[in-house]
Image 1 (cartoon, protein in one colour):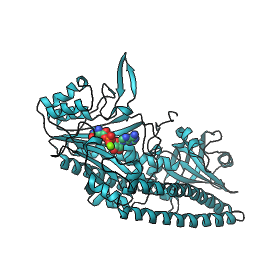
Image 2 (cartoon, helix red, strand yellow):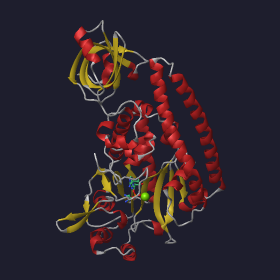
Image 3 (cartoon, protein in one colour):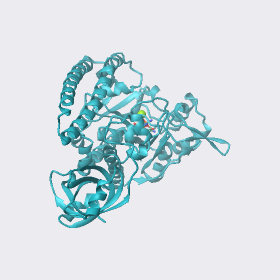
Image 4 (tube, helix red, strand yellow):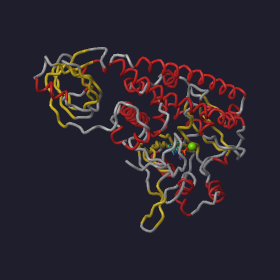
Length: 497
Ligand code: 4AD
Ligand code: MG
């Protein structure tokens, strides 16, 4: 058995592919099969002249997603998907599929989400999952290459670390337990044992809001480093993101192509220094005239684009009636694209006035909302690291600056409007200060005793951060919603499949 990914090593040889039928077009003497096998997609040509009558007839009965084994000669053809096609000599049907619910026509998002177990086979979804895999591998490679240990933190926990509002409570043999919102506190203990560690695991937050960046179950990568200050923390995170982006650019060009990702920004991110500013500077930028006029300009551009593609859509719809079959398929595809884009533009046009208002009236001391991050990050081509946050809006464990007003936290916001993908900080390492903080926040001191021990026995300056995997995948793939970045997303109102 050969895989589609390996076809380039088998030019002019006879190979057998085992896979599924993605699509079929037929003329009198030829069936054009688009076959997928998990590793890729390729066109197989079943010509009446090259196969037995029985095989030719059988090919004509295939329906979308039927499983099959196909044997044939590998022929180089630059116009073909993947650069190679298969000239079939034999075909074995494994199963003729029932009528497949996801057809090449347009489907609504609820329908697709309800069929997520099948939707995963579609090309864009397939490509996004492959990028996710590459990102995961790049993260491990990055940390392992720098001498970090990967260690796991527990999922059942006895305390909240990121505020109590988003806890999932469970019954742990008649005791209350919470699903971990973060592995950080345990990561700190492990860093005191091993110096440099990272956790890589699922985290849970009862997020009651339906947004394009919130899941209730998401994967977080949390490095924790003994003897690192805020500056070193930022440098590490920047290097890590660059390494991830570089790897994806190197290894996933087919996938990025399928996702129609404009890679020019990613290429910049891979090499250019990230922007860095304090929270106060970021607020200034957000409320500036510059930001307001950027939004005005954006609204104008969107209106123009809407006009242009509406016109295009009308024209090709007219052409459709008399078009040849291949052209009809092309037009259907384009109409589908246009309709998705129109939805996006209309959403932007609805949003822009409130974005503008929210940015304009932003008050120092508040946390950035999703739209504030979007507006800020539409103005950057590389990630922005925001430091020195108002202590009140950040977690109890963050170290503060000399004024005691600002937390030595750092968030990294992704460009192109994506917003926060990393949250981190230098940690408070002084016992008395941390005890005071826990007291002020009304946290139960007893459950944090073990954490306080880390400040009793050889406390050192240390830092760490958490990278949200799904938000990172969304940004790198250019996806508008995190629901397409994880095989089976869990969100408000979504528990199945
Ligand atoms: O900023 P957060 O809350 O930071 C922490 O949990 C720290 N304890 C991390 C640390 O210092 N070790 O979350 C970190 C990242 C966010 O920047 C975001 O990318 C992601 O986790 N994240 C979510 N992703 C998807 N859905 C959600 N509901 C998320 N909440 C946070
Ligand atoms: Mg955060």
